[in-house]
Amino acid sequence: MKTIEQKNIETVTAFIEAFSNQNDLDCTDQFFSKQIGEAFPDKLYAVEEVIAQGEKVIARIFMTGTHKGTFAGNSPTGNSVKATQFREFRVVDGQIVEHRGWFDTATLLPQIKAN
Image 1 (cartoon, rainbow, N blue to C red):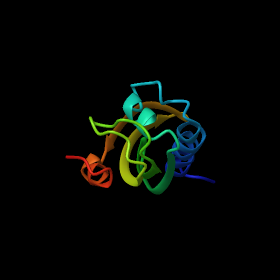
Image 2 (image 1 turned 90 degrees about the horizontal axis):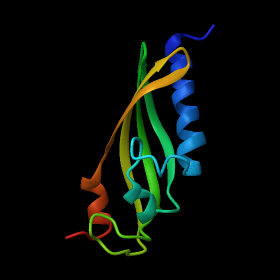
Image 3 (image 1 turned 60 degrees about the horizontal axis):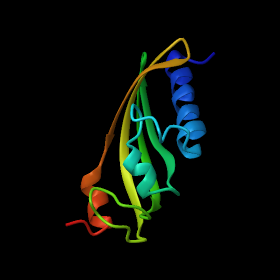
Image 4 (image 1 turned 90 degrees about the vertical axis):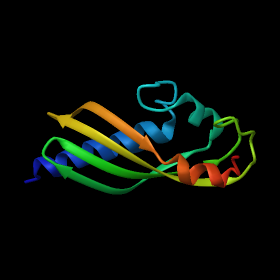
């Protein structure tokens, strides 16, 4: 029998794979910055690590893509990028009820040669 943590990890992983990589949430500022979707239209998310404790699930996710649109005032460079995101979820009865995210722009901006 699966633990609550295992079930919650499955819920979060399915959410990331099903929705993030299909760009279904790009227009929802609650989850993703619209600017990221426009600047990196070919972006893909890969779950690198997931940790769960009770209702809380933390995921470390790598975003890869190509800088094809303006980001943080920087014109498109065509550079390939890889940036880390951390996402915190609260899962209750198999449903994500809260979600927060942090995006590591400190490693992204040098990749697009930002000033």
